[in-house]
Image (cartoon, rainbow, N blue to C red; front, side, top):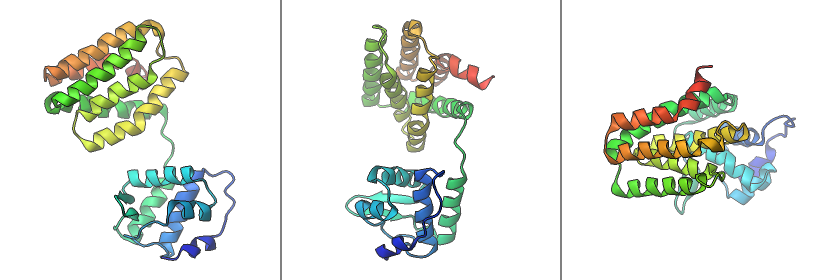
Length: 237
């Protein structure tokens, strides 16, 4: 692996491109040119950021995206390595990632409904006592702020993420981490949820939690479906 080869990558006119896409594109070029090969460890974060002319934070975000799609993997005490799946596959998959369009809000909502419905169903049968405690704490934290009419976006987010964790399905959990924050932020910025709804939302959260405690999967899904009334409105427009 040749670090100085990064400097040989030509700088194209990228003023209109997203920095994350630029970084992924440059990593792809290194792989195609065989300066980086499947299984190779990526250069040190500081060095790679300097060579690409980006901040370390921007580099991290791009690498996290590649990690999400399984194209790189972080190893404890061994750094981040390129997936060992062959240059042709890596090139094709990275090209696909660069061509992905930002999903519209309705698509995000539909996906969340599908994912979280299955997460709640699994949680009702797989949850541990410790996970019930974590969901309860998240619910209490949300309720404490909501009854006072305070913004509780982070607490609401945490409640739903804890539900996903209780599914004990790592893929579902990862997908929820990706899509839920953007959905909740959209609802807040567009004032979809009013403070007057806080008491109702607390009851809806409690109904979901109660069903999971009772290990009643059908009841948990029905309670979630009721909680998702506003989300369903977006999908049915």
